[in-house]
Image (cartoon, rainbow, N blue to C red; front, side):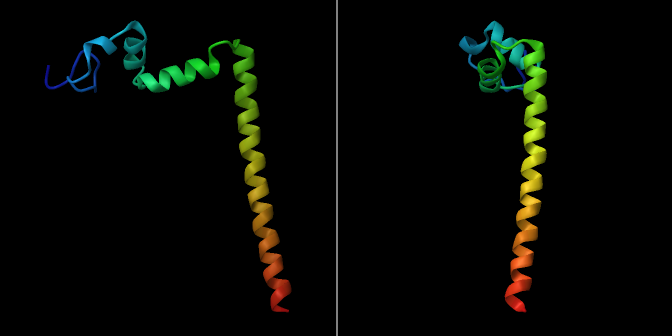
Length: 85
């Protein structure tokens, strides 16, 4: 098996008790079991439309945070100019 277990990319030391259906799913998607359960807790009870809406809100939040950071840089630059003159 060339040092790999039945899940490509994972070492042979993977305990057999962790080879559950969920772990197989996580292994076949090349994510860790921890990531699988984090996604499951975050998205488990959501419908597809709710997940799309969450994704939109997260991207909008990122855009707004970037705008705020840029505005803070402008404010700091203007304060330096005022202090110098």
